[in-house]
Image (cartoon, rainbow, N blue to C red; front, top):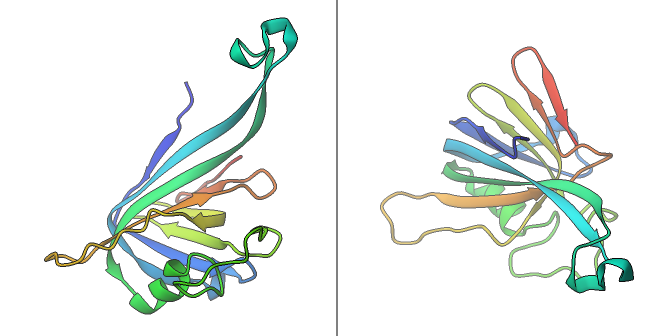
Length: 172
């Protein structure tokens, strides 16, 4: 049975860089007390044929389309400047409240982030991260925190790289 969920133990710091920036240009968004949950998701496409009664019955085969990872965490210490510049706009060089032109190709136009999470015991690198709709900022609470999530897409077969003290693990 394959492992499809990981926990990056906290406290863990989330860093972001534009697709065209190097690691030394990354900026810290914030720190998560409990760490980050990484859930691997496999994408499969059923192949229907007339032999097996078309779309309504069992597929004749199943095609592997790829894998991605959903990364979620709750930031408790936040750099608000970096948060507004790099997260609330969702895409590089876009301000909150603005939209991209419909039909924009995100990967071809470098409209994604590179993400690093440095946890208590390991570092994770996600070469292609896209923020979705899961950014929640509670208002009127005693403690300020932000629920944050992004989807990590593969680059040349690599969804993430995990570096512990002596080893690096790459998952495609």
